[in-house]
Length: 283
Ligand code: MN
Image (cartoon, rainbow, N blue to C red; front, side, top):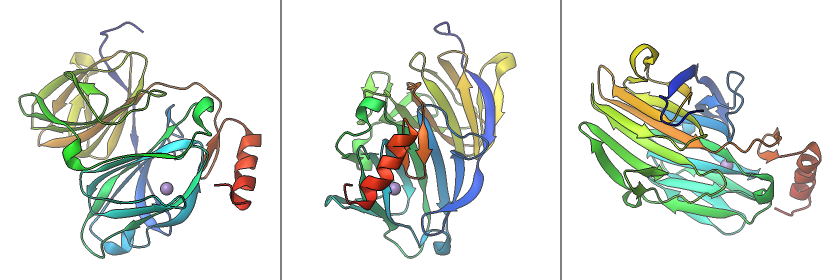
């Protein structure tokens, strides 16, 4: 892959409506049949509803091992608690980057009975050497997430990665992630250099936008995801009305993946061990 080659949209994906937890309705963009994974990303769920019955049941007690869950709240409040005594409240605009590592059992429950709940949960894989690391949280309030105006009509919140020398607060050397929340006024343009060799995607969650230049320009509608590739020079243009999208990239791990539900390991044997360890109280 040559540097500075333009980023192209390799394919587009629409999420599938599903439910998880105790019956929370959400849209699964990565992790469903249309895109099982995009190394190192294992799952992307968008949740967004005004109806309490869609989210009120929440995600009661459940385990994780071998990867990281990243929750980015846009609207609403969610409380998390784990079996190691960690607890916190996710408020609008906050992010929680949780390294499950060797394992924890937690709940993620709405801290509201009405109103809008909206956000994303992304699962990021860990390399074999880090899968059994101690659990860890990187949790940031909205004011700890830098917000820049890198071009006219463009507003970028830097959760992870770097924009014009400003780094986001998340540290994860294994996958060196980029996670940006980009707001584009209609017709505004922005050029951004992705780390070379990263796998990347963009997901539009408000309005519409265009990715790519010239013949390769590809419009994206709301709730459409683009798998990106072909180069590292991203050109994005706001569409017919104000748009908002997330841009996420990470270094692929290129390791075997053995996954079942909330466990993501390298081998089937490690997966079986995770079940045994959970049953015997070693999480
Ligand atoms: Mn969870």
